[in-house]
Image (tube, rainbow, N blue to C red; front, side):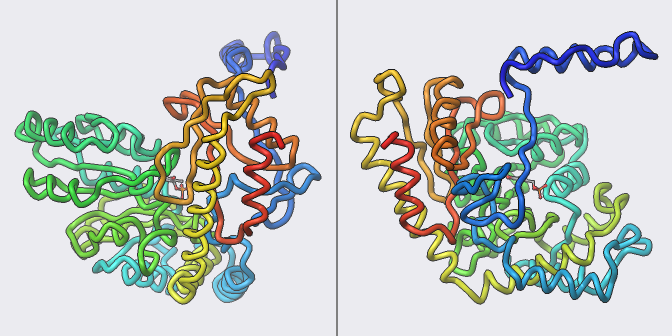
Length: 410
Ligand SMILES: *Cc1c(COP(=O)(O)O)cnc(C)c1O
């Protein structure tokens, strides 16, 4: 990564129409925006083997450590043996299996809704749902920090999109007062746990405003499901909003350790999506193995609350240790203060905001040299550069201590 400038690869060979690709890549390299993958070897857990080295893992969304759980693997293998590796068709034509229905019922039961429908990914669930529910006569009020897939779904729908200031209910109310009358339908859409910050949306207030202004609410529980709430149902349960009319969306690929996305809600909503969501209708059904693994994960979430408890304890411990350490001045390689700021978090996502991209890269490098894997996130992904640390239920205290010591440069 970094300063490598690629040589032109396609120019002069064949059709010049493709030449702009090399130029674009060159621009990405010059701006230090070029990104590439690193190869993980074997099962990732609280530690991960990356390019031959074993690193402490603070960059995973596998909050409960289920992606490597043998029970998920066994469920997937059993489903593959009975149903095969592929669903072979779209759900409405030839791809619907009993395991899909069982998974959807398990999701609806976890969420306390009438029904649920599973998509091939959370990204596709967001695109298909928002674009099915809204059109050009409608309006979407969206938290400015929403996930990219919600933004993409809103753009695809053709509705008018207005962002309200992050978590700001005064702003949301003002927008509803001035704009609601101009829209046929209105949707308020938000992450429950913000993926790049770790704080929570004020769902009770959002739902109250939705009642007042006759708006629908869609909540993205990608980082809430399995993680928050007494039964692991997510941020909606944690914030006391179970049973209120809303559109629950989430992914099977984070705490549930599999692949796929879902929407849960009223029978009418789910029935409508099965008839109108293009990213559900015109794509192959979720593979039997992925569906079975996700269903096994939901059973574990419900049967083993101690995993969730452990996750909360670990996150709280890390936040406290970081705060205690931030109180001491923390110095960069030249002896200047880093001016780190821990962002407010009510989840296993803990972020340390820094002044600029160069600083976050230096911190990320410091960790990497001490065999710790964490994400240095920079604009344009986020408004301010930050180190994003994700805690897992399977971390032990010594591992969390090692992270803090490494950050300090001890
Ligand atoms: C990861 C994520 C998604 C997309 O889910 P996938 O199943 O990975 O496609 C959607 N919303 C949020 C907030 C996410 O973090």
